[in-house]
Length: 67
Image 1 (cartoon, rainbow, N blue to C red):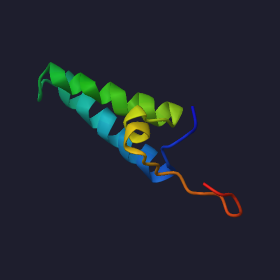
Image 2 (cartoon, rainbow, N blue to C red):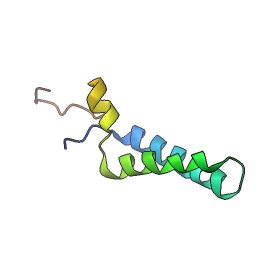
Image 3 (tube, rainbow, N blue to C red):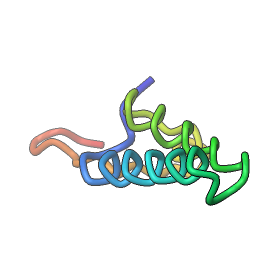
Image 4 (cartoon, one colour):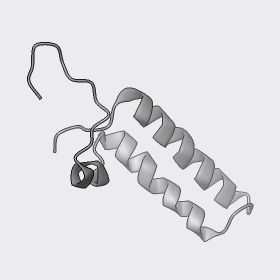
């Protein structure tokens, strides 16, 4: 698995995931809020399968390397 989730993208995924889980635990939203686990996992491993299917990457291209 090649990393395809960049730094800012990771931060946003963590914030979104934690927010969804917190809202679920406080009873503000229903059980669907546990979907917040998905962005947390993709941020932790740095890989998003959906990005692969769409041919997208939020990682920077290293200077001098062809992507």
